[in-house]
Amino acid sequence: MNSLRNINSDAVLRFGPYAFHLRQRLILEVDRPLRMGGRALDILQVLVERAGSVVSKDALIALVWPTSVVEEINLRVHIAALRRALGDGQNGQRYIVNIPQRGYSFIAPVQRDGTGTPVPVETVHKPQHNLPARLTSLTGRDSIVSSVVRQLPFRRLMTLVGPAGIGKSTVALRAAELLLRHYRDGVWMVDLAAIDDPAQLVEHLSRILELDVGEAAPLQRHALLVLDNCEHLLECCRAVVDNLLASAPRLSILATSREPLQAAGETLLPIPALAIPPASAIYSVAEAMGYSAVQLLVSRARARQLGFTLRQQDLKAVREICRRLDGLPLAIELAAAQIDALALVGLQAQLGTCLQLLTQGRRTAVPRHQSLKAALDWSYEQLNPLEQTVLQRLAVFKMAFTLDAAIGVISCAVLRPTCLVEIVERLVSKSLLSVEQGHGVIRYRLLNTTRIYALEKLEHSGHLHAFELRYTRYISRAGVAATRRVADGLSSGPAWQSLR
Image (tube, rainbow, N blue to C red):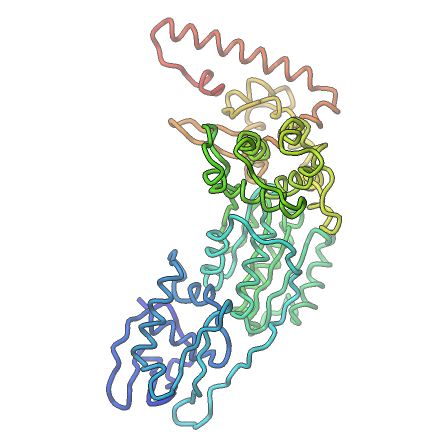
């Protein structure tokens, strides 16, 4: 089924000897119908309706294949078929041209049937936007950026979710750049980290979009709004997003947050960590460079240290650095900045105190991105006191744990099991705990960087020794129980599984 629709579906668009009947999805050459597949027609419709403008390859793929993962080669095949069907290039007539590094453009004059009026030709112009300039390349994110570009024009509301330092803002910015020419009224980014008062958000949006966010009448603004860092204004963001999507039906919204907005029609897209090498041995530099975490570390190291080269003897250290930093782009970038002073082996040796090591970052970045500690502070400060307490105490677990284990180690008169279960689920939703499932057992895990941060907080509270002791006793009891079960010929149960 063809995916494109047109509000002027009765229109007939004419170019050269061809008439494109939009309602019938039919192209006539004089009075002879051209045989053309549905996807080719979709591509042609996008290009003809934007005659004179450059449509990026990513935008074309997003519009024509909104729900599928499609390689660029598929687009090139259909473009080639279109050119053959239209006789593009024959008798000196050109229709579709490739603009290197930018996309495709339909360059022939187009008229609407019956009026003699040309279809408005969009001159190539600098799109309206307020996007900040990216100073570095994007590594390991092509697939997820492509997914955003393909889906957003049709989903209308997408939220990128993930923990501090995972690169949500970077992915959103790159997707917004690729969608610039799709939105006629521009692409606008609002960093909510600088906004504390919900009233400021409404005022800011009204000024940027030139509309009354609370209006009831439909507003025809064909624009993309990027709301960055929504987690501390969730209720306000949810209300504003619901209002905007209802009052501006041609508006799309891309949000980033450490937890879902829970707005109507929201599509969640979790941002994964960069790929890290496995615990098994890496046998070559080429093999190591196949992992995006290593690619980022090496590229940033080269930017800091002229002539930096990844050597065979560095592979073990690089693998350990990427693993200890959980594949977090922000942590890897900040670590790479220390390589010229410490070298790879020195950096690896100091990762036990990685928060102290990664306190110096990019002075030109926004405060929460200047250091890993600042990014974690931003998340921690959004928690209520009970959530902060649970996060601190869970840091005594060195590996993944079950709810039974958490209850056995950190529950108390204030943190009863039912309360603790609820708080653990909230920490998951806020991207501070990850969930692992296997063999029918659900386990939870703190990222290494988050665990070190939470351990510091627990130590400052004066309770670190007490909960380390409780953890040790729980392990001892669980180990004894497991030994007894094995001796009785029984399979290990939840207590043993929680310690794996």
